[in-house]
Image 1 (cartoon, rainbow, N blue to C red):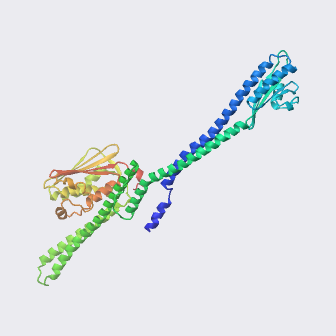
Image 2 (image 1 turned 135 degrees about the vertical axis):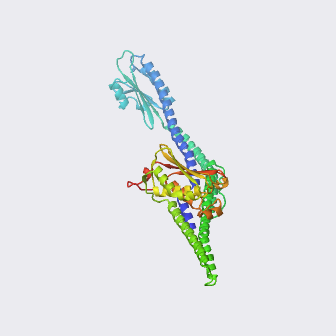
Image 3 (image 1 turned 45 degrees about the vertical axis):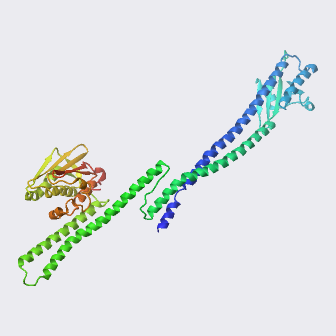
Length: 488
């Protein structure tokens, strides 16, 4: 079953090393992809812009020359224009044409294609509109059209410059291939480095997991987290939790042992008393001795019943789903009735009971359980008090809580015992507690009831000076109650 549980745990989630490796890989790959595509686009744009600028410059020079002549069709003038066009076209390994108003090419750097009609869209647009220039860019070439007006002619001509981009695209492809090769090398390095760092980062987690498995198998070794602050803090937290669990387990075992001992003690006493009676000769035992033995047996049975009742009460108040029957209670009247019932017990020791109330307090509480909790405190204050001592019970409240203080003039509680008095079956003075008829469960029951009311109980004590218990409980637990006025 344990192996099955481990496999279920391992099946959930992705391995940390794999996640770290993928993260590092993405950190390396994404910038490379962005750079590769961004660089390709930037290089292409730069090459295209450079070509455009040179085309604009060459066409402007030729257009300026044509603007000073009157008749471009003149053979001598046209020869000079053609010569300039050839020189400019060679710079970009392109082609230049001069188109007249009738859409006929009168000068062409491609001699075999001279004196033909040109139907390019740019030529048609410039000769039929007021636009001065047009630039067309395709994947394979760039075309630049410039409107030219010779001197005093009143006619518009079009200078067309076409330059291929193939050479530049080839250069760009070569750059891209080298970039891809470089990126591939960088990617391989990134994979190796990412795998190494993912492995190194995962080692402390694996060590922490192995330590946790040893705890799961029942070993009492501390989990050790290294290298990273979070792992160290996590291991310390888990170790503290395990210590608390071990303490709870030890407390459970001690509780079972104490219960067994406490229940066994009265039974043992009853058995001894019964065996003593059985061993006496019949008819020779005085009636007074029988009565004494039967009284002792009855006392032990009452003690056994008291322990069982307190155990059942403790179990009921220990359950997380215990229901509280909330109602609006006059706390002063509740305490007044409680002290009245305990007055006979206080009278036996001549202990003075005093109730001090600073204001009227109405609170939403479970009256039965709260009376039980405060009764335990007041009974203890009476039982462990001095002759002619006093017990003062005070009540106060603010806008959110009410406070009950039980102060006595008794023997006090040693400092080393004050943190343990709320433990089950713990007794500061075992002999005196048994003499007083205590079970060692009263304060544990009181704490549970106070906590069920979302309250807090504190103790302040000095030996030979007395003890003070302070209880703080919310005035209104309506958020935890049901519509009928009861709930947790």
